[in-house]
Length: 223
Ligand SMILES: C[S@@+](CC[C@H](N)C(=O)[O-])C[C@H]1O[C@@H](n2cnc3c(N)ncnc32)[C@H](O)[C@@H]1O
Image (tube, rainbow, N blue to C red; front, side, top):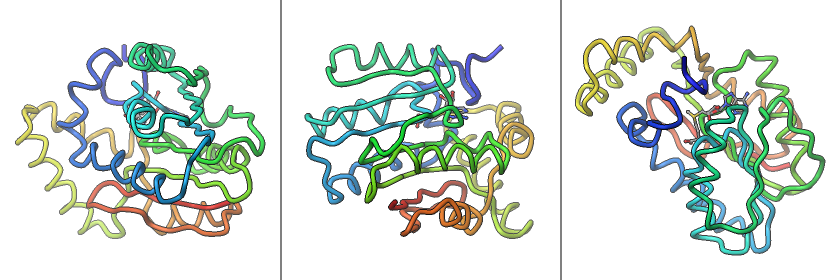
């Protein structure tokens, strides 16, 4: 049994994730770059669905004075984060999902990377409304998610590219097939338009695409 809802157990996640997510390292690069221009001196930053703490570690390396709160519903993922950030002060950990966040007007930045595509539309709305509530006015929400293509034809092309990527990165034919079956059964991607619509409906005043590929996209939204 897996200890979290991603494809991999917490103990092997870091060694496998780049073989199935073509641009995994790019997400964090984009987030840090945006955060830098947004301005985050002495800021409070919430990363929900923090996983093994890869983003958080880079945040602490780049922005020494940020106070971080890391949340994840998987106790094992959170433990992996704690080990990775053992040397870092100013980091708190909570074993909760985004639907359980209970913060009000506390954070300058909230991030959620590949954490909400497991949810139904209603759960996703709740999760992202909680991210909105956790932000101070003027705060920024940055999220990356798997996305759905807008037509079946584009979906087939995207999936074919993804399959080639995984095979070229050491996944077997069977592992690749099993991974692709997760779309629509374990995770439920929505289109870029649907993402933007939900964020606007929640109340964000400014919602935009940050980055996009054939399978994942990043969004930034200002409260
Ligand atoms: C693919 S991993 C991404 C982890 C990390 N953000 C990263 O970029 O490596 C998905 C993570 O989302 C967490 N997760 C699953 N459901 C969640 C929810 N409802 N709210 C917040 N996190 C969730 C999982 O426990 C897992 O740690």
